[in-house]
Length: 583
Image: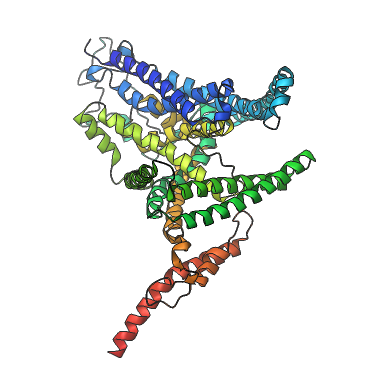
């Protein structure tokens, strides 16, 4: 046949099967032991959601390949077995929206319906419990459906139109001759002109074409807006904290195995903290039984959950520093290799993050673009091998999804009003699975739109460009968000703030125990009279909850941090200047 469209269809089917199998593998290995052999419906939703998210990311490279499926640049409809990409885009994103706003909330309400019941209660009233959970979940989902339906219907009726700005060109008309041919006396192009007469119109003569957007496209557009807000926040933070978190984990790694006495001392402290958390959890449970489940109670629950996560992390770190058992040496060797792997992955991730930020600035924020940058890289990789550029393109898109998860985890650990649902190997409950799958699905639409815009030169003449590049950016009411690059600017700003946060604050979070020897304090640096107690006062004792503290307190904290960082440098410079004056 000469065209590779049949091969593309086969590859697409194989990739879908591989994605499904891989997601089943993730579910089996990440699930909590308490969810084994139960919660089958939430598990099905998790696998389906992850598959839809992964396939939606891979559809953009497939769209590019589908554009090239015909030889000699023939349009896709002229070839057999080309993929109907526009229909597939709309179908996958309608399914995405249904999963995010209806199916996943239903699964979460259903799963959490009996979390506070004992096993005996569940066994005694199983059928009644299942019916009650289904009824409660349906009530929430139906309410959500009504609200979403009303919002979508009203918005679509009022502003569900597309405004295309076009240049209005006008020219005179000439009757065709009876012989349906042209001559010097009746030319199509005027004598002495090398262009059509319409080009003589004023270049400022612009007009607007208004037409009604299709309802599926409008649903995708609104879902993209919601996802873009989350993507800008979590993705902007995550694009910086994902590689820097790995690098700083290597920097703060345990350098050597601690002694048994140190292990016992630290374990005792962790045990005390665990008992305090248990008391706090019991008190919250009593408040719940008493019916006092207000805002303060929910806030305290989130605070206890985050303290528990930090405690689990401390226990894990302590076990790393004091491996036990017959294979203690092997465990320590694997720990060292694990931190080396984090460092290597962090460096590679930092390169990718810098490339992303540079590409956004060079290609999107500067008008006209300075360079196609990554677009040219993908095209050259395609010239080397047909799928190499496509694979690199897919990797950059998937990296943004990883950044979203990393950003949500980082902000969730530091802000009380953000609920955190960490993913742990062999310890992830289904509600955390469902939450993260919903977040991935919601942001995957925005990731595709973001990639379609950022790599418009590489993905030109595709169905994705038609949906995200034309219709979405011309929708009435939201087109200005894209016209003025609001999401891209927010993404870069948050990435820069996160980098400053890591450079200024996280790099200063040393292990304070390394400054103590036999109960004595050590100075911060040689020949420095700056006492450690000031460090602890400025960096440790002033612990502010940013969700509650005032703006003034926060800036005072930042200023004290910056003064603490600058103090050693000022002291060194003063000594140098003093020495020069003495000489």
